[in-house]
Length: 438
Image 1 (spheres, one colour):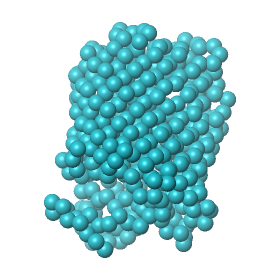
Image 2 (cartoon, one colour):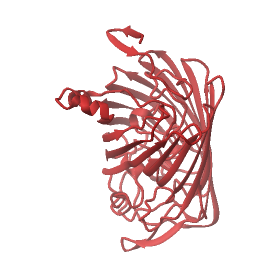
Image 3 (tube, helix red, strand yellow):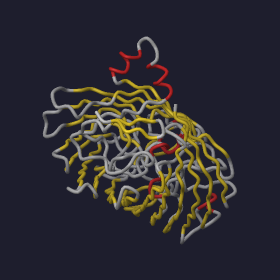
Image 4 (cartoon, helix red, strand yellow):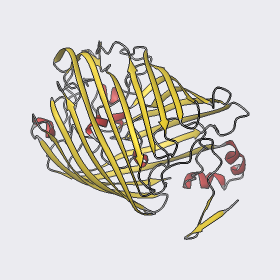
């Protein structure tokens, strides 16, 4: 097998795969694949970080390596300067202005299924634990959600991914059945920190679904077409949560024959779309139950330049201003205060965001992000109006372990004050985040 030597580091030829080749060079980009989750016919990752290297050096190391079970994680922290004084919300994740914060401490245990082979059923799993301020955007009702929905804590923990995968090779070109809690499809930004293009996020993503809990089937029809279907407990809700409701999901993914374009379209929640109302923590509360159609188009111009555009159309009946309420006290960074004002009838939220990436070295790329987003009645953000944001950032990978991402952006509500707890129409936000893998 051919080996390429660069700067003393060796890379073997890419392992065999049944899917089309990965269209993007990774590194420096966080992934080599078009959006897809999970992907059939793609080999398990061969990345090994310091903790696993240490485990492999033990007397049981060879047996653990052969089992394909891995334990790894990362620490991600950020600092920012903002024109806001108290809160950068409704943007995410850098919500506390002019501070350094721990965004994510993540520890993950997993075994990826081998969906390249076609001769046997394979079973895998993933268990991801997170601590930091980013838990606020991953919280799902029933999954340790009291930290946000009862107490409105700035810091918290979350068991963000907890699932088992069963791969069956004999249905079409292969099927992965996922059971548990998974990150929702098919967003550009619904990833953990190291897998995103920037440290901050678009407004469109901020108010999207993060996780679903249930059963999902992903079937590869051929190299170009994949279909998905799921039954889950609703937007960011566990089946045992008071607001849970049986919810459907349907998705389709297409990749062009020349491997330069992909469209990933998902009807992510299919139910009555009626806001869930109930009493909890001694108050009248509730939980969002919006339905929405979301799609991502991706295009590769060259190995150095690619673009991704995501759009969604979201609707909900008899909702409240600000969405899912927290019974906790109002804090300087935002949130808390109980349920918002009623919005009778149907309310809509929709928008689009574009990411365009420019690689200029084996370790560096620039990201340009632009978006348009409209929250008609303030159901998602708490502040109705038309929003836009424009940001540019640099990603520098010192090596496979250490990464830094500086960026600057301008965010605005063109109709009403929305930022800094409703005091400002616009916000300039600049800062950086650092990720260390272990």
